[in-house]
Amino acid sequence: MRFVNQYSYLLFVVFVLPASAVAAYFWLPKPVGLALVALLGVGLVFVASLQHYRETILADTAALDGLIGKGSPVMVVLFSHY
Image (cartoon, rainbow, N blue to C red; front, side):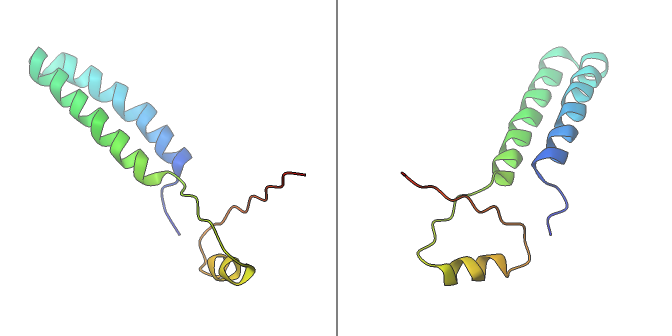
């Protein structure tokens, strides 16, 4: 089971990014502090991209049963043109 999901990570980012920007403003030289906050933002976006749910196209119900049986959360979406 994943300890961090999309929503807990979002709460973490909402707290850490402004806190690091304030800390950089007060304690680091302006260009270096700005660069570090920008680098932190890029790193946080990269980690968020790893947390994104991925779509899996299954060919049959046996593959679906195997995916559900792994023990990790699964969202099943059914689509019909009718």
